[in-house]
Amino acid sequence: MLNKMKNMFEAQKKMKEIQRGLENISVDFEGAGGKIKLSMSGTQKVLSMEIDESILSADNKQMLQREIVSSINSAASKVQKAAAEQLKFAMGDLKIPGL
Image (tube, rainbow, N blue to C red; front, side, top):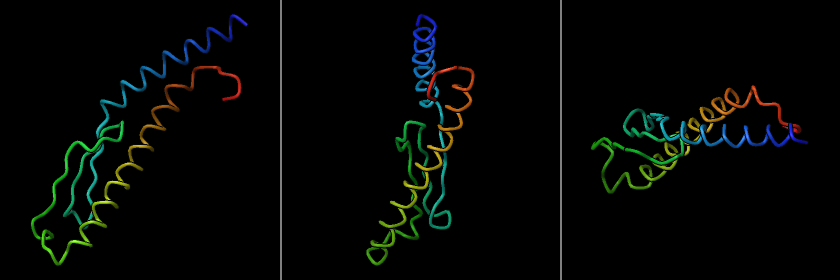
């Protein structure tokens, strides 16, 4: 029982370290053929976005909206994969029953 508690404490400590590490991850993504560029943190916050002026017009409004949403979702997916790899690596040495 004491050993299980120790493992759980170690897991909680490791998770806090991972969360701090995710704040330091930054993923860059380009969409719309490079006309939309964004940077997203490991906690899935958009840090910056650049939109090429050539696609900023009233005629392109719907396309631009779709491309922005698509770019954000793709960047979030990329961040999730990076976070999963970091979690897998960091948690690999802990022996937690059921995980």
